[in-house]
Each structure stands twice: as structure tokens, then as C-alpha cells.
Length: 276
Image 1: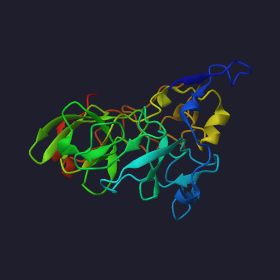
Image 2: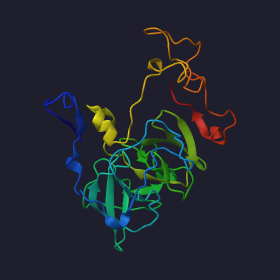
Image 3: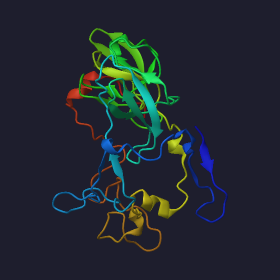
Image 4: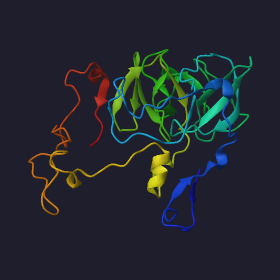
């Protein structure tokens, strides 16, 4: 995996980088596993913006990803590695022995014609999916189930991996990408390996237009606003913040203010909180 660097043919190209798609083997998605996406521009059912700075962007087809991989003990062959505009990691098209096709998240070093399998005691090979209780300590996994049978919910973005730290009764201790250590049920499934496109977070966008292609609208600095629009707005020249604590547009205190609920149920499963 490498980063593509462009020649400075314009101000926007200078310093611009993108993912090298040499690992991609198929450019058109599998039609039976896609559907059209309706854009909402971050508006709710009343037409009101619920998340700012979203809208526009290129048209996308949604690829149905199999996060469960619940065809047990049936080998599948990797038919293609593809790009997915809806997520940061690459995806793999797999074909089972019975002919069924599915999309899965593609781990690093997974290649076309590789064979993978989901089984309680599958071999510890890249792409194979097995029960957490049967995975040795120290192995890196992705697409980890929080609740057995629900499908993977942890470790699903580019370059991510979750490390198995310990086995304790009905629970497995895992080290999250955030450095948090938590317990998950050992009967849940996880896939062996680290997800592809690990250099995704080092990409330099290069120009404003490329952000617009991605559906990201401009963000205005609070200090550049008027007093009516933000607590930081107004003043002559470059004014100071003017408030004791950092605040959001709506006056809600931020910056060091804890937002996690004290009595959150899942807190009982957190062994070590993430490092600040």
C-alpha cells in the first residue's frame, strides 16, 4: 500500500496526495449487491439541518456489506478487491462454494483467489472468521461482534485492528484502536487480520473542490462570525474569546467537559479507559 503523489501542475495539485489504487482489481461493483442512495444533506424528516457542513458530493451506490459472515464451514474464494465510496477501507467480493456472492471488509494482504472460511475453529489465517474464545492472546482481529450473531461492530475502518489481550471465563479482553481495554462476550466472532488502506488518514486533500466532491461543505471559524451567530463572534479586529470556558455555537460548554453518562450500562465492561 502506498500513497500517490502528484506533480505541482497547479496550486491545488501542489502537495496533494491520494490512495494508490493498484490493489483494486475490479472497478464496477456487483450489481446484485448494490442499491441507490438518497441524499438527505444531513436534514431530518422535518427538513431541518441536524449536522452542519454536509451536502452535495458525488453520486454513490451503496454496497451491501456482510458484517455477520454467517455461512459457517463453507469455504469462499476472493473474486475481487474493490473500492467502496461509503467507507475508508477496501472491500472484497467473495464467492461461496454454493455460488452465493457477498461483500466483506478486505483485510491487508488479502489477494484474489485466496480462500477464507467462517468456522468456530477456523485456521488463524488472514480473512478467516472464528469465535473470539478460540483466538490466541496477541492476535489482531477486525469486525468484532459486541453481541453474538448481530454482526461486527468494532474495528471496521481503514487500517484498524483490535488486539486480543486475555481470555477470562465467558469474556475476551480486547485492546481497542482508541487504547481502551474492554470485555466482550467470548462467543462473538471476529476476523483475523488488519484492515486495508491503512494510509488513508495521511491523504492531503489539496484543494477545496475535492472536499466538495466528498460531500463536505465549508466550515466557518466562530471568531469570524457576528455576535448573533456565535458566542465568539463580533469585536474589533482579532478579538479574544470573551467567555471563560470554550463553548459551542449554542452556548454548550466544551473542552474538557465530560459527555459520557455516569451510569452508562457498558461502563461495566470497560477495564481501562482510553489514554488522553
